[in-house]
Image (cartoon, rainbow, N blue to C red; front, side, top):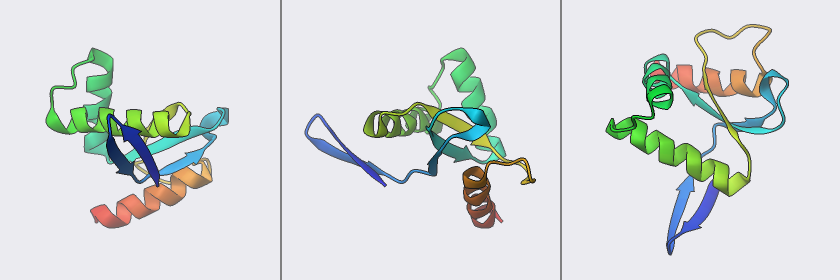
Length: 100
């Protein structure tokens, strides 16, 4: 959970995780469902965040990055295997339970 003061307002959010996936240094880990991830990937590649949900996601991830001082990894987990980073696996299991 992070809280950031922005222009006199408190912005609060729940982090999916912080970890060092894929051999990287610590990052904010944001887990998205497959559908959301594909929309996010398209918005990120084109720079077009006009979709209201993608606009919200961009702000959400930006706030987490500023609040923690870390870069972010946005992940989509379709399946969990022995190669899945433990923190990503735990968050993916939680997300998959909520989606099912």
